[in-house]
Image 1 (tube, rainbow, N blue to C red):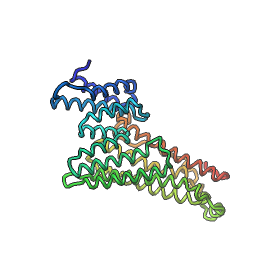
Image 2 (cartoon, helix red, strand yellow):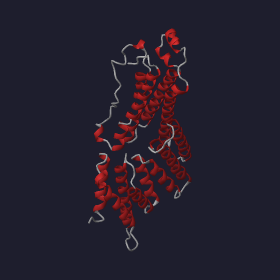
Image 3 (cartoon, rainbow, N blue to C red):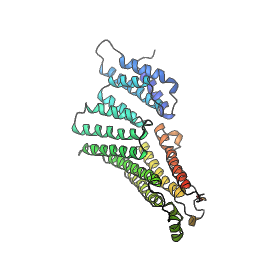
Image 4 (cartoon, rainbow, N blue to C red):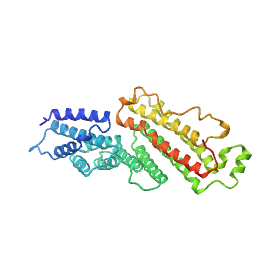
Length: 352
């Protein structure tokens, strides 16, 4: 049996391992759930000292972090749900807030939103109330994007998610005071909102082939203007607007990166990755969907690799940075889908 002094140290070591490599704690999932339930239900038989309460809360927070690391990218089991529920019920409001931050860090936005909403009831000031409310709204918006069971159209999901993030920005604005500035938080969320709007615009452009296909005179207009993209009709103009919008988002992230020079290293890496992700996406759209025969082989002779210049190898970062690093693959899939739609809408058109 582990003593009260050795259990927190063991949890810290396991949490560090779980952050270094995704899934490394998966064989321990039953033990983690059982230990969370046991610690939450432990009865000392008397009044616990402040040090004992603090140590117990720290252990439960670390166990919750291990659970979030293990369940990242997986469907939650009933046992894991129950263990988290019993743990949060046994914690004080401050510890619940820390668990909610950990949940959002590892992408469990549904649980983070619920925990932030629960912590609101213990808010001691108006600024804290708006801060927690804003975080809950932002996590609710992110959950809409990542929920695999959501059956709504991607444009509707992007719009609803962005609406929740904008509500979060308003709440966090209200939490600003003379002694507590929220400039970085608001700037980051504004960049996120603009990015979702750009992706929504891109999805709308791809869907426009069904709602407004190229007119019958599109080929004649293309020959007259010497612009092959006119054969595709309205979508070529919409995709050009998408490129401009996404490039503007990349510049917003770049501006936030420069203004946040005193931020921690992981935050700066995230901003750098998001800036590069958007700039690469704008170039991918031009290469795949906006190629003109007058450009010759310009896009065949060069490629756009997602290889940001990070301070250290990606293997040395935590799993939240690693996941963000590979987040461009779904965007590539979206572009390839639009590419296939364009090809099939123009059977006689050679887009190679």
